[in-house]
Length: 75
Image 1 (cartoon, rainbow, N blue to C red):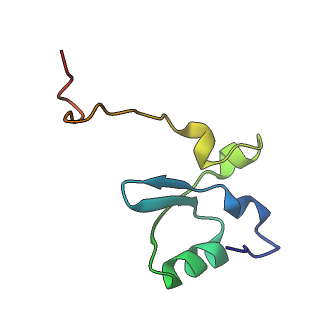
Image 2: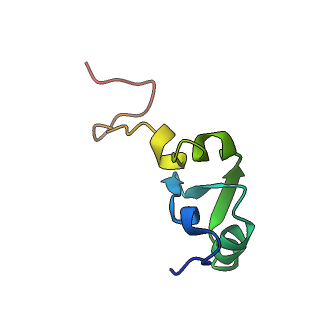
């Protein structure tokens, strides 16, 4: 999906459990995603953007073992 030229950092989003986390400072991109039916969860990461970091820089990837769930670790 093309993003507005004046929001180049808006391409840095994170998909989590059916929702997309995006920087709240990119309202046009958030509106475009929402118009496509995407559940967007805007958060303010403006201080991190100063260091050229986005929402994906603050994420942790978990790999769940089939049949397990968070808090229910296989032995």
